[in-house]
Length: 104
Image 1: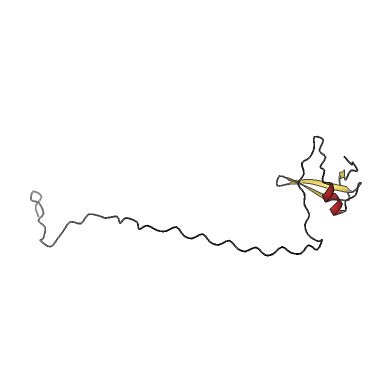
Image 2: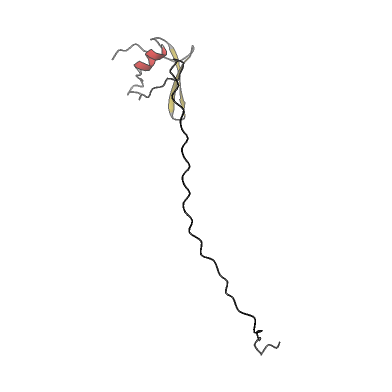
């Protein structure tokens, strides 16, 4: 083959363009079913108790119903800690805070 003459194709050859197939439509998968929650356990009095309260302007937190349920009486020493943006209050013999006796 010389540079000046065009290449001659054989009669059985064909030029085929590169093709990118169109994606087939795919249906969205069905969402997985949510698990069924177990029935609530009977309350035995040994469960977890919690309350949500906001400290007032001087830092007092009022949660009388929870204090009664816990049996925390006035004068009980408490430890106060901040855990993941929440205030955690636990009884502690050397606690710097105490359960007050205000009835407001």
